[in-house]
Length: 344
Image: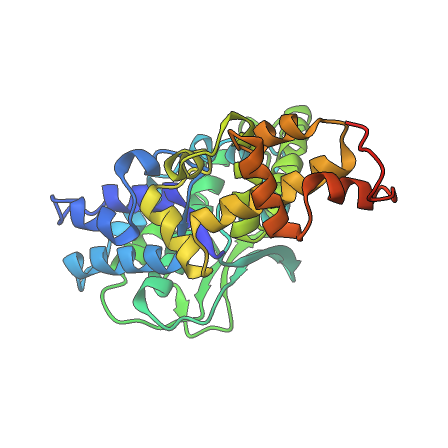
């Protein structure tokens, strides 16, 4: 799923100073203020862009909210990701690692950090800009990178050049004030060009040992993220399976464990043509077959481990899934004669 961290949405809403009633903004992304406090929650990109456009409408044509949002960002707010950047020995080394881990907060674009001539270029490639929200999101992303670099060095870094692939109407004064140079629009990419000497300077609190320690944690986070990238229904089945020994879980319980509101959870199931009850049934099916074949649990024990309260109900469900009784299935899978007594 293409999505961005809920932190970005929360920060954008905080800077919507022309909209004192924030309730409609939360409705756009279908999340509550409490949900947006969790940095692990992700906001679908389409909803995020609609949010940005709603705030932009309140400020048009002098758009400044997304630059205020970027200016409010601090390394610490990005958790281990931000602390690792701040503790890098130099800005260049921080940017090199940043490109590896930025997907933990932004699953929409691809980033690169590389030397080009006498400059060091941080670039971003995302979907083609077809709406104002995409353009403003790209501007905010580049502006945030610059804010983090300035915090890490505790110096007012000024890029040599800033490029954006999009063009847009409205005032660009806020961009000039933030970057220190007027961005070039209609370029081949979105990029910030730094003077090489500036990115080679040490970070104010850079510490190679801490940096290596934190990046080890980020490597694990990337592995966890890869797991979350699996199909949504697979993840739901996995969570349901973990809970079955305590009975069939409620939708709200599973949604909460996965960091989603009930409406968002149900919408994502609907997008895949799934229902919660169907996934509960599939979770029971998969777990039951695994336990019947690969465990020494008795059938009555498997009954309760798969969330059934009666063995007769379990047996009926198992026959519906496989066309065989649990006992016959166990014997068949173990190569035993169907006529022989079961061991348990």
